[in-house]
Image (cartoon, rainbow, N blue to C red; front, side, top):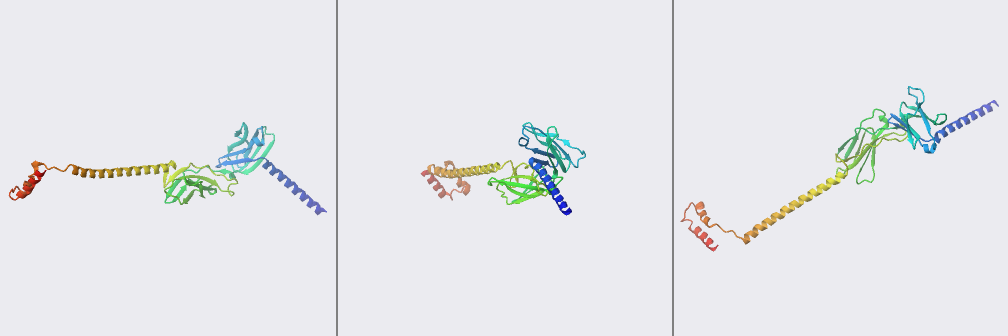
Length: 304
């Protein structure tokens, strides 16, 4: 009999425990919050105030287990939606956080939760990003963050103007490389840091994208439109050069034809006073020897 009573007591205790847990989980599920730990520096917790508390204001308080001040703090900076509190922004002071959402005067607790703040980290953008292009391989590096490097991955995305969407490559922080790039094409690149899920984060948070850059064969461009301009300028330059060479060729042909036409229409007439110049220059003035030559010159002059 005693044994039966003990078993009933255990069953009753378990039922109460399950009920309490169900009630606790139901309370957490009743209010959906978005939690972001910005690089372990600032915490932001938001809630859908219009859906959860229509026409009402709520208050927010929090405490970090590791904080020196062992008391609940009120929210230093509220985020507003249409004039109502919809979130809180405060400094990250530890790893174990408890927060509570209450009515406006703090007399009634509406929601409470405990969590590990470092499971909600959203990293900063990568700093000092450098690109190295060699042959068909691009390597991207960035500075290592001071904390949590093992929990970070560096993601590289790229596309050319011929690609429909971004292609992605992820590697350990803080170096990533990819092969197969065409040096004749312009590519858009962007990089960001990602937290590993679920070993480091319970939420898949990534940093904002670093500013997009444009590269073609290790040359940094303002945009991939410069590739089109460069090709157009090259085509224009080559066309002008071809036209110039063609004009020079045509001018040479016309010059040769003009000389032939000039000779056929206007034959060369010898100067009379220089008829006998060759007699003295080529034959040292020996008149007797050059009588036949002089006779030929005279006959040619007479014909003209």
